[in-house]
Amino acid sequence: MLAVYTLNDASKWDEIVKSFSKHDIYYLSGYARGFYLHGDGEPLLFYYEDEKLRAINVVMKRDIAKDVNFKDKLEEGIYFDLATPYGYGGWLLEGDGSKSQLFAEYQSWCRNNSIISEVIRFHPVIGNQEEVRDIYDVMDLGKTVAIPLTNRDDIWNNFSSNNRRHIRKAIKEGVEIHKGFSEELLAKFEEVYNITMDRDTATDYYYFKKPFYDSIRDDLKDYCDIYYATYQDKIIAVSLMLRCNGYLSYHLSGSLKEYGILSATSLLLFETAAWGSENGYHSLHLGGGVGSREDSLYTYKKAFYKGDGLQYSIGKMIFDQDKYAELTKMRERIERDNYFPLYRA
Image 1: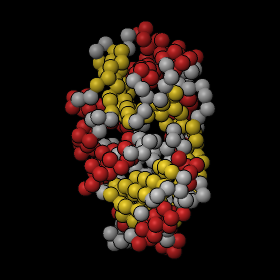
Image 2 (image 1 turned 180 degrees about the vertical axis):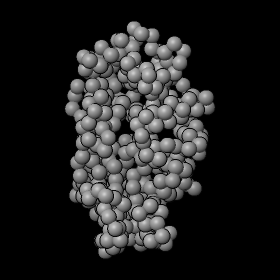
Image 3 (image 1 turned 120 degrees about the horizontal axis):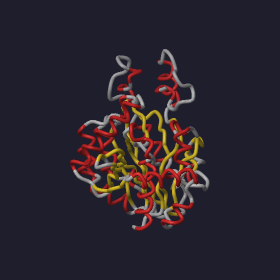
Image 4 (image 1 turned 90 degrees about the vertical axis):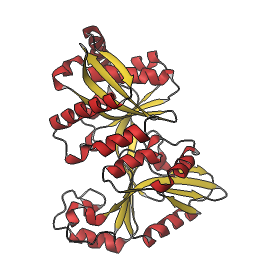
């Protein structure tokens, strides 16, 4: 039987999620709430259970009419699509039962609720794309990097020699790493993060407003830390790290360009990984390159682990082919022909 939970059922939502052995923070209601406040759609938890199979999936239900490409072309509240909340997710399955009934009910619910399509960003550390390759159109994209958190020495030895040299230099120059979580630190994080977004000419989406940060403070205080690097008593780099169920995740970060030569973020990541190894965490996921490309950002992250990268995959499903084609046809110009759903490209 398939059940659907909203943020109004947050306690039950989290109780269900935590009953799954591989759950991570991306599945919790408090994580989804922040991106609801950011304008990404309505969070939903799908929960399926029968005698031999249990499954969950967390999505953002998005009103297609609110997409800039359909302004004044569609009436709001009529057509929707689903997407994984910012970060990673996708179905978690437990048990050895057949998936056919689960996805028959899921697809029926989507069609009955005017859901046109869904895109999933699978969790590279969990590798949950493998369980639904026969259900979704799964596309393997680039690689991501996760540091195994065995012990401090192993973590260090798996860094590239250049990375170790940069970190030694940071220590020698007097860079120090601290960890905490407070209103003041969150405000400082926002300040440095926004400076970084300005420098990188980020799009508006990557600038988060007060309700988002309030949600981090109120909903995620038990699941995150702010690591920060100081030099001569000045904060020069910050990172918001997520932690849940043995997983550590490098979520959002920023740094001051004028101190870039000190490699403060590299030292910060080493100390985060070392802390994780000493406190029962099994991996620190750094993510991949921009747009899943193996670019300079990916190369930087790869310097933290000599082993193989993890496969990052997305899953695509269309519930209403006719409406999908109609919406795509309504677009005067498609900007990215390899994007899904195509009507949002």
